[in-house]
Amino acid sequence: MSAIGVLVVVLSGCASAGDLIDSAPTQRQAEELGPGPGPGPTPDPDESSAPEVDACRSLALDDIAPASNDDPVVACSKRHTAVTYYVGEWPAKLVSSARGVGDKRLTTHALDACERTWRRTVGGSDEAWTTSIVSWAWYKPTPDQFVDGAHWFRCDLVAGQNTAHLEVLPARVDGLLDGDFDDRYRACWTKPFSNKPNVDEGQLTSCDRRHQQRALGTVRLGRAKADYPGARATFDKANRLCGDLVAKWRGDPKPGQFGLQWPRRADWNDGERDATCWAVTRK
Image 1 (tube, rainbow, N blue to C red):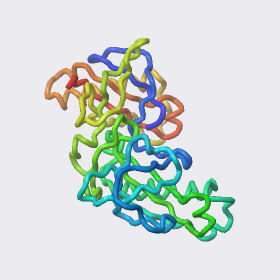
Image 2 (image 1 turned 135 degrees about the vertical axis):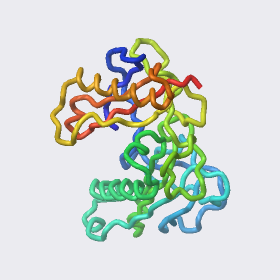
Image 3 (image 1 turned 45 degrees about the vertical axis):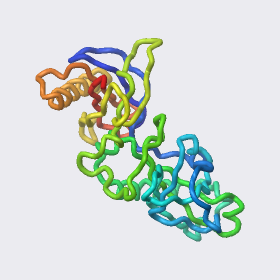
Image 4 (image 1 turned 120 degrees about the vertical axis):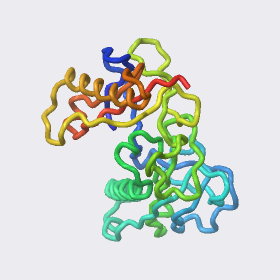
């Protein structure tokens, strides 16, 4: 979900828009991806060779920055925070016309492939992807490796890259978001949303950690080709539908305190039709 309004409401209370919160799987740009060195066994003897699918690595949150990564593989039976779910090879035609490993067309090809295969790997639905902290990172060869013939790119599944911690992953990540997935990978928030100034805004976290707000699900606000109904009408519908969803989750006629995210005009014009509903839990 892209730029959206955020606030906490009590029943049908109203307030002005808050800050952007993005809980959708992150699609990051080429130079923003890639972790640095971390603990593990001896690295592969040929760092320019293509990585292997299903390989596991122990990455730290601060490692997700460089474009390339040579962290060693660890046994998937041991603690790990990244699983390689796809390794692609750039088409020869793209490589031959590229000005280097940072070529925009190479990047676009890799981003599309990583996103498409990520969705197939984790399973679930649009709602599951929006209400989880599971996402992906991609890595590419260094410029020297690219010149030497390394034309692969690597897609790693991670959980929590927009939080304070990367979460530990299972050995196999196929179907990770199918059904009622584990709280470790569900999106929660450390504080209730607020539109008041100078208030601790909190941050995204795993629902397996201390939190005060939980992402419950999404609600549809309009048909795909529907015209933008206006700011007031969009918020009112999101407020009402999220209130109903939270009340149902609580098993109470009234929802109590809850938060929501809803699309603005620009988001609506970009095709966004869903609002995300959060229950204040103060757990």
